[in-house]
Length: 389
Image (tube, rainbow, N blue to C red; front, top):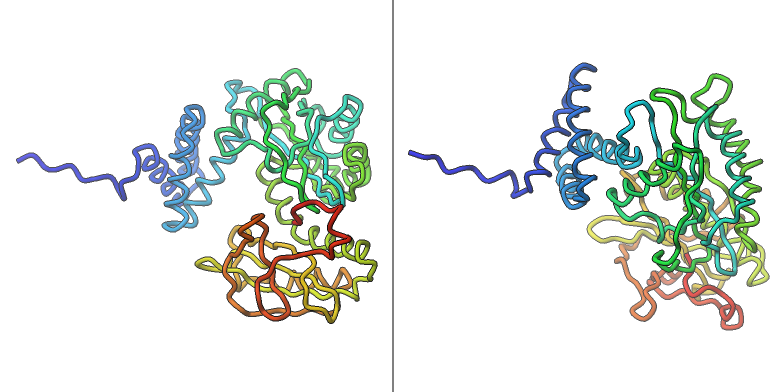
């Protein structure tokens, strides 16, 4: 009697199921030799899906593992990211890596996301090669300062972008970005901009300065802030800004996401102190968790001291494995106090993830324990960006 074929686990597509098997095998491996077996096969499977632009299979496998196996999820996510930012190269003699140099900025005016002039490109190349990249690295930079809305969307788009930049890196030349089809940039009080590049080195050679014996990561960061940061000044006219250490694309993006949270609070306090003509001690901060099925983020509503109207707000999203039991709340409080806020109210209400029906802006906690729209006094609001972030 012919047996009925069993359905695939959970109805997953065949390609996604293959990724699950390989990722679980790598997660359960007990030796370096076995690691190599699973690594190579998982890399080949991921490369095939990236080349065929099958984003759905990659995300389906990740979604499944996010609840089934944290270890296997990490192995698969690391592999997908490394293959995407590795430029899908066919040259087995070299390593190629997509890198990002984030810069956090705030301004009362629009934060630029625009083409980078040749002189600024030249300066950035010099400083990156001097303070961030290893000796003799070949480098290609994209001649545009990207907003988060304009970054490659998804792993397949990232791999495609890295491949184009990687080819330019082979000749140590920069890549011109056509701006016709780039998305519009949302306007926020504080936001992040990205300089993107690709590096090429002989296989196994160091990529970054801190891989060489005469430099540490901390020294590279210090030098980049001192020397590289100045190169961004012509690109960010009218902005206060702070650079983040350049790194591999996904790692740098995560570090920028993490660093932008306290930076947005610092920017907001500086902005309110100037706009409302009051010192930080004249402000009050109201902090509360906002839920869907669990805590997704903390939101901070700012008022003038002894007043109840919320004049501004900041979102502090939870990242990665963070949850309400982590040290997040203590970090928020420490950041606020370091900015000079002495009147601090922490609510334990379970606020839903509410947004304004008219403009889509987040609702922020008020001293009365309600989620309300942040509104600057009318005379100060007229010259401000539509959205505050």
